[in-house]
Length: 271
Image (cartoon, rainbow, N blue to C red; front, side):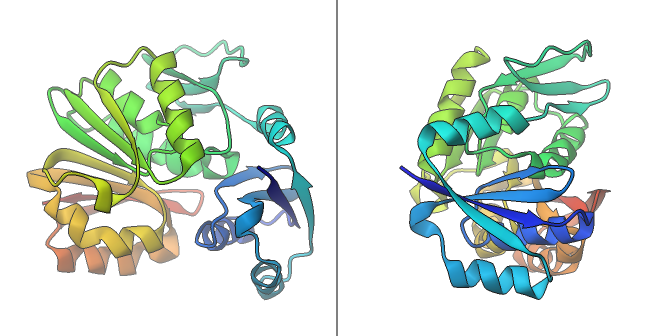
């Protein structure tokens, strides 16, 4: 299997954030940031030259494209992967990281194509909000689990059962590996989307995906939350806030709270 790496040459944080959101909607599922560039990864079969050219031109960003093989891909992740730290609460690191930081919770993952440093802000936002949610004895649904980070944290916080799903094969395999690596016992990992899940209600739903997916499945997410339960969403830019709030409210959610970090937001909704 081959992948394409688009190197978008910009140091502007705002442009990078928008490019990540736009490219995510086009099938790009890995992002890394260097001092000079944003690196965006996509399965070669899903790569479209015209789409990339259109997006890059819209934001006046020059770019290059490189084809990577499987081994090159994993080497790129390990070279650029950075730990995620929520001070005083939780650390997410790879097994090759040597950190002097101690937090109450630690998650060790194997970085593969389902994770990219460009999404650390949303991961950190979700983790930060999770420390204020009661997971003890709760049923949790992690929609778009990626590496399984949030599902693993939910179990560490006391969840009784966690269903973690992702429609990406690499994410499915990687999350299974990471669940085992962290000695988790109550997480069920499935490959698929909402259509493949047996209908039931959950106390907490975690959805760190993107605006397009969240808007598409908002009604289904509402139906899947118990009365009084919580939907915590991210993968959203600040400019996404109003439209997502509107759709969430129309679906029936109440008490929507927003938190912001580096141009990204979480929305916490109550049913």
